[in-house]
Length: 391
Image (cartoon, rainbow, N blue to C red; front, side, top):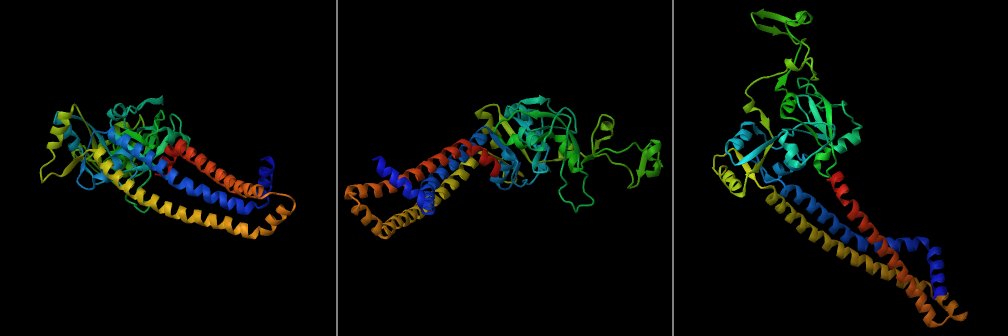
């Protein structure tokens, strides 16, 4: 048998290109359906786990899927906003704890999530170094944000302007990093968590500027009328909140009317959850309340349906490729008639020739299947990371 395997090895090595094409064809036939199944399964598990850990989400009426994806993963386009009073409404119901979210802004490719300290407890987030934010202008960054941006404690993160052509827009806010989260393997690793008021400052609902009564601001004053000072456009507005200028930051308007993207409602019991959902059934209701697990189940059902069609297509293509591979082997036998005849003349029996030709097919199949299984194991091991990077 060694002599047969030796001849097979020499033949496959001599015909490298043909062997490579056949091995890759077999590998793809086996790997594509297996790898797709593994990736879809891990995607479903990842989506379901975060959705099932989030009982209820309150948001403006619109697409429930868009609302859930934004509140859970911070990656979809921000849904329609509602007012902060809706968060207080959930609290006043006595049925749940309200955790407001505002996810409109970004710092480069990372979402800035305006929320409260309750979010840390709800998601069981621990600070690996530093502390949680305590005042406006501070932020806590996820482990991936810190790693990719090279951030450390006391570093700074600058919010990205929504449009470079918005000349009247709000200045980007320079935020101090006071904490770095421990890795969790969730979207929180790629998030920048700030106090809700900080996100409102980024929007321009609050600002800080130099003291109009100070001598340095004299050139910016147009008119004084008692305690009322009218300033011109040259007044210096701060884009960084420090201990020295923090007292100058102030909000304009009623904070109950300020915008938020969603509210995570954590009911005290199943009965409380049912009662809370019942409060949002009126036809003239401006907001909606959804169960993320149900919304994601509908999405996964669609994904699995698409997967079945994709797998069916892959199987059809695989069968065609397999038939083509068989045809290649058959044509190869026709082209090797003189070679086979020469082997018979030097004393090789028909069984030896058949064993050698069969061994060639088996070796190609084994190599292709082994590579496919190896790739499937790699996908199963690193699939979650690939999903987080590309999805």
